[in-house]
Image 1 (cartoon, rainbow, N blue to C red):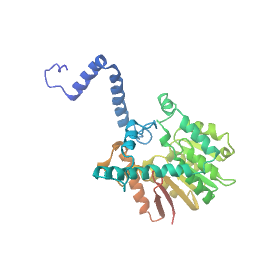
Image 2: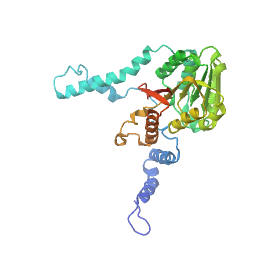
Image 3: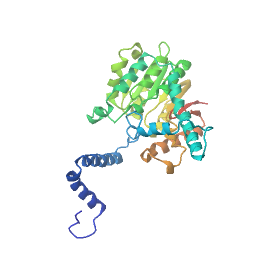
Image 4: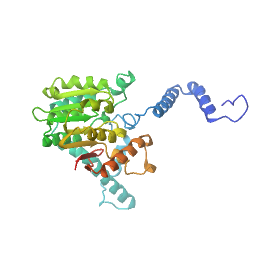
Length: 330
């Protein structure tokens, strides 16, 4: 590596610059990967929404890796109660715990039967969309992925709660691909309506391309723009049910505005998603494996505590998927 002209020891920046100069000669593919990684780091620092949609680090593929197969084969015949030595006991206990944890949501999803035609249509489009391509072409406002959507089991639970509540007027704060909205629409009684707020105009068109083909679509109105700016425009409504799944750092502000502007009907119920946010609200930061998401975790923890001590509200958090809170006035 070359030294700076002044003969001093090279700085880290000097070393990186020299490395970038030599990499194209010795490993052409590596330079593109490194440059992309550096660009991603730069954009992450500047983009306040990183971690909200694109920061999950979740792999897009679902293929079973060789190590997965090897681990299953290596623990064949052992369990928490079937082992011959210490290593087998550890492996068997870990395997059983993994089966319990990994099998729970899979089984629940397999047993759930509340997904209707509109929900299936939205999910099919959601899972088949080239979200990365949309973002690269800057058609969408943010980088999205299927993991940003309401989970199928959770969405079907929300449909069930809608059926039980029988609301006349529902507000959704944060729509994304409309799977949660579809669940609410399928659960609405005759004459019921849903207003969805979403920051991205692209998603309004994306969702309406599906909902316009269904009778339930006539009950749906989508308003675009930041939620704190669009909420006042619907303040003349009295909502029986509210579903919140938008910017986690603004959750408190949404609820405060609903209360301040008297937008809740008597006995109204508010459902708030992601209130256990990757377990980070109750796990110390020392255990963070995706630290760039910590800001949303801290804001979620503050929101949960604010609700807990609020004199006018009562809440319960259920460990469905990423945590779902039900709250209402006392």
